[in-house]
Image (cartoon, rainbow, N blue to C red; front, side, top):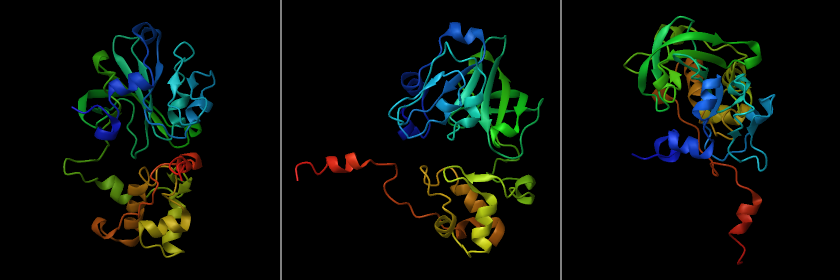
Length: 272
């Protein structure tokens, strides 16, 4: 089996331990600790600046992968909501059962006491889990932090939960169909474009495709190039225009697919 994020679409445990580090069992027994699972070199450091104890280090260049100083980490969880890639988790192995806290940006939110399917990094079923806390504080900027209780031996696997109202056919049920995203909800996190701005592009500026929305309000022009927001933009477009999914054209990808420095471009022309 391949063990690379570029081959699987998600990082393997071996990759994470090698690139980001991993607490030893002695640290796990002390209490909650942040687990960073960001293995790609991208220009991003909100986790480093969010930590009040200096426990996360990226330093220079900004494309370094983050590493955690587990002696400094107290498990406060401030880095979880700050991470744009939702790639930081909190693990607590200090009790008889394990607890996993993860960022969650889907509606509706689960409620404390719910029993729900816990999923792996690959989105595969791991075990049933009990929701013990849902932190949707305003300071988290609409990124809720959900804590679930799972068997101790599952804490290294569980990283999210199955989305509520999502059935086996792959269709969302009534909640999604009836409720629209609030206008102040940030859809494109790279460019900080809200759902309201996307609706304005559709109705005021007559955008009829994802590419036209991109040109009018920059949704999808950020570092991720629409990988995070593209489906939500498409959903809003369908809601506002009545188009079906097969009628909504995807955005046009533009190279490079990741930032390239002038130095890298000049490197290839040295001999000339």
